[in-house]
Amino acid sequence: MMSRFDHYFQMNVDDVIEYTLEKATEIDWDRDSMEAVVPDSHGNLNYVYRIWDGKGHSLYIKQAGTETRISKDMKPSKDRNRLESEIIMLEDKFAPGMVPHIYFFDTVMCACGMEDCSDFMVMRDAMLRHETFPRFADDISTFMVETLLLSSDLVMDHKEKKELIRKFISPDLCDITEKLVLMEPYNDLNQRNNVFVPNADFIERELYNDPALHLEVAKLKFKFMTDAQALMHGDLHTGSIFIRQDATKVFDSEFGTYAPMGYDVGNVVANLIFAYDNGLAAGATAFCDWILETIEKTMDLFIEKFSKRFDEAVTEPMAKVAGFKEWYMEGILNDTAGYAGTELHRRTVGMANVVDVTSIADEQKRLLAERINIFAGKDYIMHQSSFRTGADFAAAVTKAKEAAEKTL
Ligand code: SR1
Ligand code: MG
Image 1 (cartoon, helix red, strand yellow):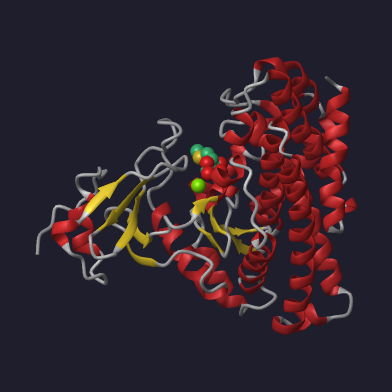
Image 2 (image 1 turned 90 degrees about the vertical axis):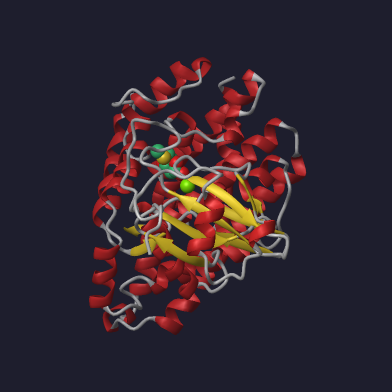
C-alpha cells in the first residue's frame, strides 16, 4: 500500500501522529485521543516528538534532518538514525534495561520510535537544578563496563566483532568528533570556536599556543581514529542520559562506533565537572561535594567492576596471560584521562558548548569555570598515567580550581 512516508521528508508535529499509527503498530493506539508535542529538551542534531494517547500509550519519534540543528553547514548522513537505533538495541543486550526500548527504525524516513522516558529527567537539566542522584555512579559504571567489555575482543568472537566494526563504521559522525573535539579546540582551524571574549587571551596562551599539549592531543586523535577497541557510545554526556532517583537510561548513541573505551569514560568525568562548575558559580556546596564524590565513585566502581567482569567473561586466551589485565586497564585509564581532557576543552571553547558553563551570568564566575576546565583538562592530558584511582580524578578538579583562582 502506498504511503506518504515512502519517501524521505522532514516531518513536523502535524505529521507524526499519522506516522506513529503507520509504524508503531506494536502499540494499540487510541487514535482519537492522540496528541503530539516537541519536548523541551533537545540535542544538537535531530528532531524529537512525543506522542501519546488517552489510554496511557506513548513514545518518542526521533528523526534525523538533512542538516544538523546546531549548524546548517553540517550535513552528516541521515543514516545516523539507523546507527543510533541499532546501537541502542545492542546496548540493551549488553546492559539490559539501561537504554530506552526501540519500537522500530525506518531507513526511509530516517526515524525511529523510542520508549517515552518523560518520567525521567535529562541529567543535564537536573544538574542545572543541582539535584543529586545516589545511584548514578553505580548505574553508569555498570553501563560502561557491560557495553564496552562485552563488545570488545576480550569477550566477543573476533570475526563477529569485525562484522560490527563494519556495520557501525560512521565516517560523518567520526568526522565531527575528530574536528570538533580532537582538533579545533587547539587551533580554531575552521574558525567556528565559541570563545568567551574575556577569556580569549588565556585560551590563546593555554590552548592555542602550547605545542606540548598539541602533541598529546594529536596522539589522542590518532588513537581515536585507529583503535577499534570497543563499541563505545561516543557522546556520553549528561544530555545523553535520562535519570531518576531509582533508575538511569542512556540514549542518543548516534556517535557510537568502534573506538577507545576511555572516550566514553572520559566524557562522563568531564561532564560531571561541567555540573561542578555550575554548582560552584551558584554557591551550591553540597552539590559540588556530591559531584566530586560521584567522579571518585564512578571511576572506582568502573575499575572494580571491569576487573571482576574481565575475570568472569573474557574468552580470548591471550588476554588471560598474567599481567595482561593490568596492562589493559592502565590503557583505559590513560585514555579516560586524555579524553576527559579533550571533552573539557572542546565544550569550553569549541563549537558545541555546554549550558552548565554558558549560563553562568557573572563574568568572574564564568572565567573561573572555564579556567577550571582548561587547567583540569591539561592536567588530564599531560599526565595521563597519573590517574589511577577515583580520588586521583577528583583531586584534579580541586587542584585546577585552586590554580584557576590564582589567575583571577
Ligand atoms: C554538530 S554536533 C555537535 C555536538 O553535539 C553532539 O551531541 C556531539 O557532542 C557533537 O560533538
Ligand atoms: Mg546527542
